[in-house]
Amino acid sequence: MELSWEIILMQVIMGLALGAIYVLLASGLSIIFGLLDVLNFAHGTFYMLGAYAMFTAISLCGNFWVGLVAAVVIVSLIGGLFEITLLKRLYGTDQIYPLLLCFGLGIFIPDIIKMAFGLIGKVVDYPAMLQGATFVGNLILPKYRIFLVVLMALVLLALYVFMKKTSIGMIIRAATRDRLMVNCLGINVSRVWTVGFMLGIGLAALAGAVAAPMVQTIPNMGDEMTVEAFVVVVIGGLGSLGGAALGGLILGQVVSFVSLLAPDWSNVSIFLTMALILVLRPRGLFGEEGRD
Amino acid sequence: MLKVENINTYYGSSHILHGVSLEVHPGEVVVLFGRNGVGKTTTLKSIMGIQPPKNGRIIYKGEDITGNAPYLNVRKGLAIIPEDRRIIPNLTVEENLQLGILHKKKQLNVSEQFDMVFDYFPKLKLRVKQLGGSLSGGEQQMLTIARGLISNPELMMIDEPTEGLAPLIVEEIAEILRRLQRHGATILLVEQNYDLTISLSENLRAYVLEKGQVKLSGTPAELRACQDEVEQCLGVKL
Image (cartoon, rainbow over all chains, first blue to last red; front, top):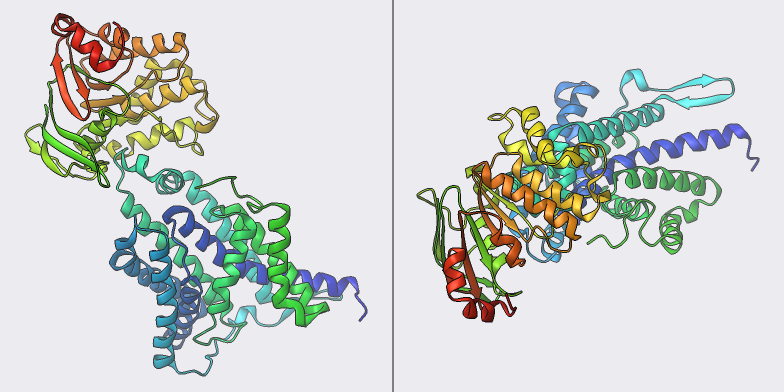
């Protein structure tokens, strides 16, 4: 196959859009791990719930954008409820217990969705204004992919401002490093945990909701995404938001180009990339050494 | 003001405090002496709710606060300045201080409180935008005291503020403690440096701990009267 620069540029854009999904998903996972020390093995499940909430909301109201907001809000609330009623009881125990709880949730919820929506995939349409492509010279730019990249940039910017400029963001940054001392300064850390968990879940739901038109919305769509989100977080360095962003973008490009050049290798390439980066830099790109 | 009644505290199965009782009155400096590992820090942690006692009671201003979460005790007016300083390394000096006043943002004038702590610690003012983790040991100690002080606590529990610091800085910290005391602060202090501590205030009382129990207590004069016993408990010649 002739690799013209148009094809290469196309593939870069495809990779950026895929990377955008990874970035949204993995930044949520990273916040949850950094703040609560919980390895959320149900992260892909919330991604899937985001897609289904999107489908349901759009079938009710008929508008893509209302559906998008509704999906994120609803799934965040489900996440908050899960944290308050179940996850909270396991803080302070060995890390394996919250992990198992999340793992169990990741098996249980997709089965509920199978019962409610059936096994057949649901279709979420692109919004009218983002259908098709624009042409720049010979270059075909699919509008929806461009939208994903812009959305990711805006969300990252909003996250940065939230973390750096607001009190609650400051508390989250502090509690990520030393929750006991934050508690000893008169701050109710457990409420901050709920907020942080909901924020992380909201990001997963957003990723699922915007991915819905491009992928098949099926009950098990989140399973491999959990693993891929962990790969991104490991590449970027555990608990680092900037790392999750860079890791997501790298992985998006890798998958995009490997799918073009050697489609059979696209799944393997994800783990090869992780292995390669970990060999070169065991703590991940932005990870801190010896973080406990 | 604070009354600790016969508390027993455990770390897992190891019994650290064996029925410790003590009192702190408003405006006093109360010092806990004792060798390493006798339970001085654990006493502070028990009061704060970090390591709640299994039994016994902690009464603060007539109210039973035993086993309350630390953040609730802070809101009642307690502050802990831990020996390991616990500066949040990835936050700036300014943010570390803001963290200390967040729970009282509505009651206090934040910029006045900042001015107040910068008056105590002028060096910190030069470092406001620097990350907490980049400060020297002495500066971190100042920041941790400032962070506790900024919310105007009624009772400050200060754990070994001079540990591991150069003599010049030790004297600086001691001067700050004297100044706090003159301004009417109530302090429960853990300190190894006996001579320095005795020099802090006229209005000072001390408890000497041994193996998780209060062995001796009294004013500096009263302790001098039984100096042999004090020396034996602390394992040093005074």
